[in-house]
Amino acid sequence: MKSWLVDTGPVVAYLNAGDPRHVEVAARLEDFSGQLATTSAVITEAMHFVSASKRGPRLLAEFVAASRTEVYDVCRPPELLEAAMLMEKYADAPMDFADATLVLLAEALDLRDVLTLDRRGFSTYRTRRRRSFRLVLDTPS
Image 1: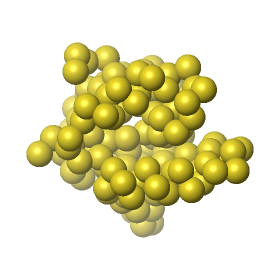
Image 2: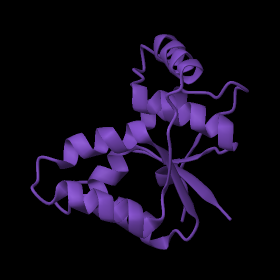
Image 3: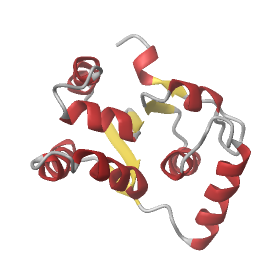
């Protein structure tokens, strides 16, 4: 089964029909029949952005449940240190904590495909084994 990592931006764009990237993200998600995976940091960040709308938090929770997105908690002490070191390494990108946890999850699950709007960051980031990411929105359906 094909799996994609999911970043904050596409989740927020998908839930907000007024977002400039909504149609593009919705089309990719609706065509996808594999497994979505993300981290609790991404969900926390997305919840912050969607909470500007009264129904936003519920829509996010319903999306995660309906899509059966696997949410991984990547914040044990060794992972926190590794995330902080990644954030230092990619400070010029810049890399936030949610991005760092996705890089760590990519390594743990051996995934390269990422649904993200952060083209600059995820074109730069590498896993511990120096593997690059494949940006889902930049590849043909």
